[in-house]
Figure 1 (tube, rainbow, N blue to C red):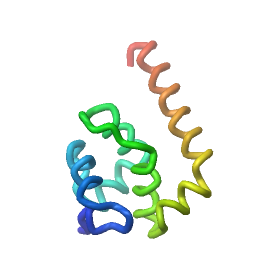
Figure 2: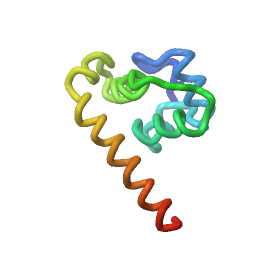
Figure 3: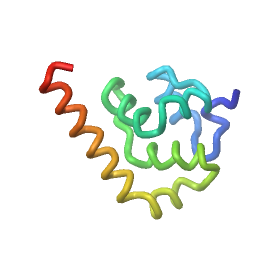
Length: 96
């Protein structure tokens, strides 16, 4: 299994953030997904990740530079994050 810090665009700092939410390798990141991983790091740790972490995780899984992801997919990713947060809030309101 490929360690997080060995993936393109992700280094030791990213690996530490992801390890804090039990994402240790590429397989874990693929299983959880970059959006859920980003939300977990942001909401469940003391880290304050920027969106570049999200772009870097997607770039790592697609073997693409994170700057390309940010440039080409930024709007779609922001909308996906927003939609995830709204859906989570709805479930919380309903007691799930």
